[in-house]
Length: 168
Image (tube, one colour):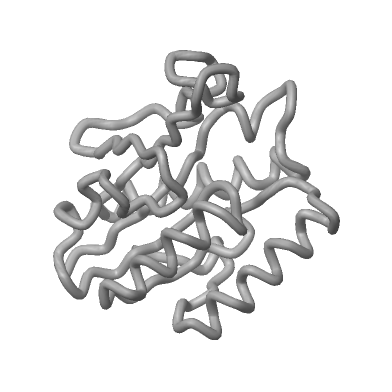
C-alpha cells in the first residue's frame, strides 16, 4: 500500500504574520522537510485546506487561506469546512484501505486530532509527525496542548514519531 502525507491546514493564517502559532518558524521548517522527504520517496501527498467563513483569518480567497507550500503536479488539494479532513472532502476515496497515513499540520487539538482519530476509525495505520503539528496558547502553553494531544492519540492507536525520523 502507498504511504500518504496528509498536510492538514498548513495555511498562511497560522504560520505567517500577523498571528502565527508559537514556534511557527520551527514548525514550518519541520513541515517543509517532511514534505520534501515524502516527495522524494514518491508518497501520495494531500494538502487539506480549511475554508473559513466571512471575516475568519482563513476566509476563502484571502491571503490567510492560501497554502504555505506550493502544490506539485499529482498532489491533491482538498477543501474542508469541518475539523475532520475525511468529512465531505473525498479523502476517504483517495486513500485505499490499509494505507499508512502520516499526519502533520494545524491545529493539534482540533483538525489534526479529528483527522488522526478518523483515520484510525477507518482502519488506517496513522503516524502523527511530532514537531510538525502545532496550535496556539489557549489556557495553557501551546506545546503542552500538543503533547497532551499526542498522548491521547497514542492511547487511541496512533504512532507518534518525531518528524525527522519519518520516512516514506
